[in-house]
Length: 140
Length: 161
Image (cartoon, rainbow over all chains, first blue to last red; front, side, top):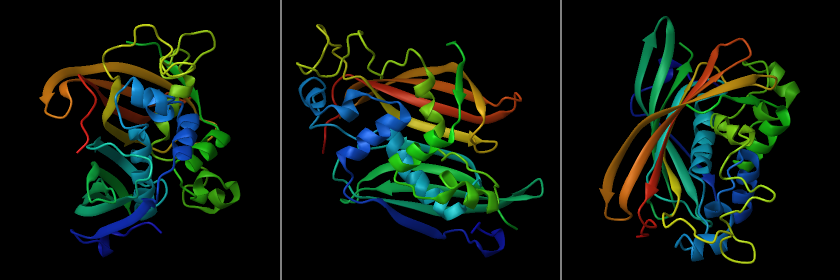
């Protein structure tokens, strides 16, 4: 259900667990779907021995895609007008991520209503992995 | 400026992409549901645009037959002299939507190089940032999505804390 400007308040929050125990198989699936086959995300041997990381880690765009799942569940389908993020920490296989949206403004522009949100995705240790913002069209 | 890319948006690609991000929303896979919905048709998830990589014939992060690949085969890397840089990471990604892409769209994607800048970091040494703007226009020439992406090359692997 789309959101209604009349029922929204600054400070409203929405959150959901977007992935529980993120698997290496999901990294393979994301590579196949997105076309980003970077060995940093698909090749443990390369990630450890050439790149110097503990192992493969999650595509930034997969972290954003997971954050986006929470966002579209909240604002409804086809309602987003803006969605932007910064990747603040790497995400690893085995991580459990929770994404949150907070209402910062409800506004009217050219007869249409919009909500502005800040976004944050945290891992199981409470470390922030994604921060961002989004805007969506809402009902009056 | 790089050559324009052509990105045909297809329902099966959207289905696979939605599965990969673990999003079971019927708007990404069920035509009958989508037709009854407010949007009226299947749409692509909000981060789908970056799957344009599939349509870049020279995309550097895709293995290609008979081209040396920097990932592992017999050895941890297929290159004789792998780059001392640990490669690029994604620092920021911003999308603006005029509408959501849908199956049947044929998007023309224009890539524009943006700013570059440097910063020192305790966790990864010298960071070299570069910005890329991509404009996605549909078969009618209408702007559908603008993407602004910031990539970062690190001097050394990012320290884990």
